[in-house]
Length: 256
Image (cartoon, rainbow, N blue to C red; front, top):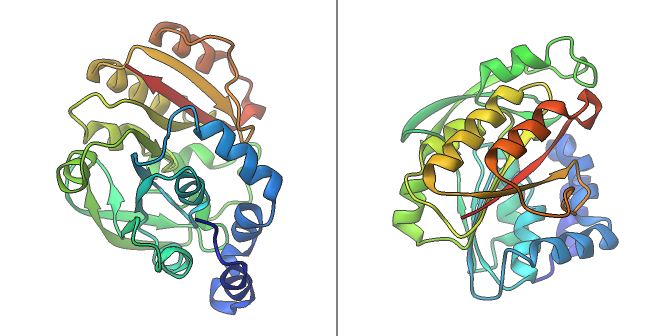
């Protein structure tokens, strides 16, 4: 499924969605990036698969999973981002939007919203503390708080089925998301940042406890695995610990 460009342009022109303009341009304005994303995710996702996209933001990964023929459960707690996903994918019956955060338990979570840059909104106060004064993060301000529903990966699996792939990108809350999962899956990714390496280590430990045994990573938005071969959790922890601060962020990929 290809997103209607008129809807993208309408969202970009909407003053109420001004904070999403940059994300929409990056997500839907670069065909080469979209093609690279599809090639990358094709190693994890096939037609007919179910994918859970935790921290869907404006749905660029959701779009890639759909182009690969997968059904998608898009999990996004921010009302502005959820509105964009509804506009872009509301006519697609193979996309289910869950307007909630994902964490260790069901209930309510306090979301710290970055109104100017919603992509780094977070449920983790520790993430905000780690960003305070850090190179590359000094301009970020979390200026609002919002109580949002919280679900878990276990609850999503129980409702929607076992996914072939789960993508977790929740700004320093990845360990909490994996704490809400009690089974190994065919494949999973979680974001890491160099300002909160401890979160990545805890997420890695949790993935190992669940039964994942092989790991790799992608740096930033490169759409490619950084290491030529999959490695153990111990080796991955060492790689994450030695990354330069300037690497900033990326994703760890996990296989059983």
